[in-house]
Image 1 (tube, rainbow, N blue to C red):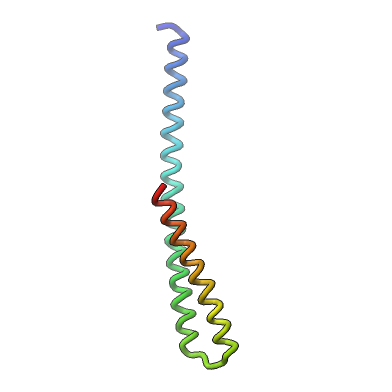
Image 2: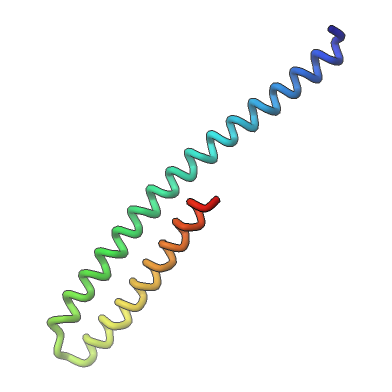
Length: 91
């Protein structure tokens, strides 16, 4: 074989190896991202449940307003995290 053919085969093998490493790295990154997202989803879900418990026992209008805003924020965060996990699993 000529030296140029060997070099081209070597370069091609390096590119394939790099592509495979990048693919493996991306899958590990997605797995880590998914685990962090799942933890955040569970935390947001717990926050919603806690806020609902506090809201059930309040009689002061100002506290009811406060917990209502907190509930809306926690729910929006939960929806955002669900969208994020859907996007990472669809990719």
